[in-house]
Image (cartoon, rainbow, N blue to C red; front, top):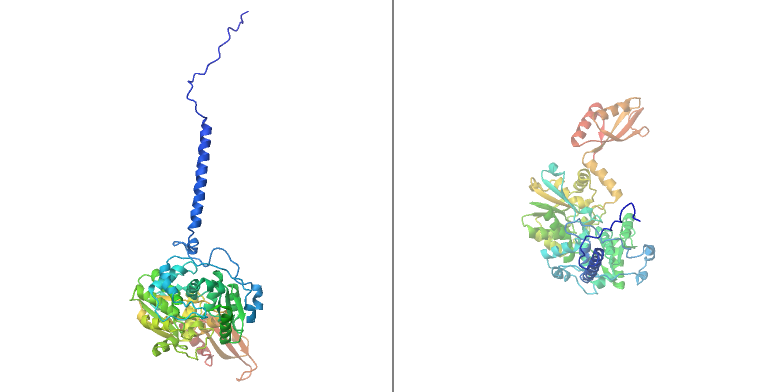
Length: 541
């Protein structure tokens, strides 16, 4: 029976022609991906082997030529000595052993230039300190030092100063007080420590003072994992002791004077094979300090003169002069010291370092008042430095005030003494020229800072005091205050004395301390008060 729908339709056939027998496309892609992953893994493993075999120097791991320089090494490290044991080291018998040390290897390039500088350090174990070398340092020594310490110290700015217009010259301030310990001494100390033999680095170093040199040794020795001991007298400021301990050093208080501390430190060095370090003019230390001259020359083009602090510790002046005179002999190098301690000028006249017993190391002057510590730096100074001038204490205080007001820089006497030469007008030949001043230190204790600023304001005729006698009646004090307000003087303090008054009865003696803008403003105020109160007495500074 035929279906009414008609015959069944034939199924459609595949019209594509069969191709060659090949694996599916997905399989091919998978095989290629596996092959690529395998090749990458093999290359990565070989690259790691090469990196491990040819590891760069320590400096190259965290230093880049075009990046800012930072202090210290990457990451935090434990201090060299457990701070909990500080109180146990008051006697030397506790220092025999039981001190944890680390073995390290100083790796760096440019070893050819360093060999000559390292050969100047005595290697004999019988010596407990670094002796001075009678040979003058070379420019290559300073260049080698700059390369080796570039990762451990800041390349501080040398900036144009707002004080330039006031003193009629282009002034650039090299701000070395921005170093981690607030002092330029870090440069010489770091190069000194990294140049020590590995055996001595394991044994440790010891210093005996509370100076910037000791602070720099405490910090950088701890960073390099060199055991470090600092002997301080019992009269040392507690703030200095605390800071030195925070840097990672073992601080021992011994004796009432610096001489007692030094004697104790030398005895400990002999008994325990520590290296006794003191600020001497060895070639290595001077080369590290001389890197300041290299940076100033690089940062300020067309320099006419550079001013450095001098005094007995003139290593910065001598080392930097060696660099600057090599690069440009026409640059004038000038040293500045205090009139109270003209150690360098006297030593240059005598032709040898003098030992002036009057040079007590006052806390205000710091290292500026120290004794001349070697013939090497003295010889370099006599040969390369163009001029050495002396300034008064008043000029140093005013320069500290100028730096605080115009540069927002809190510095000590050693840092401000270079600018003091311009404040005192001792260098008129520099008018209209381009001058760099090295501000080398900013470690001023707080109680001294307050006294220095108060004294500087008085010396600068910015704070004055006067006394006068008024009748003890209502309204007289207010009239005095009206005159001060009209003259735009700021009242800092006012006192009234009723009892101990030698004048007639029912009078009061008024003592007033006011702040003015400058010397001219003070003279105007004085004339106005004398016109109203002829018996007013001014307190001379």
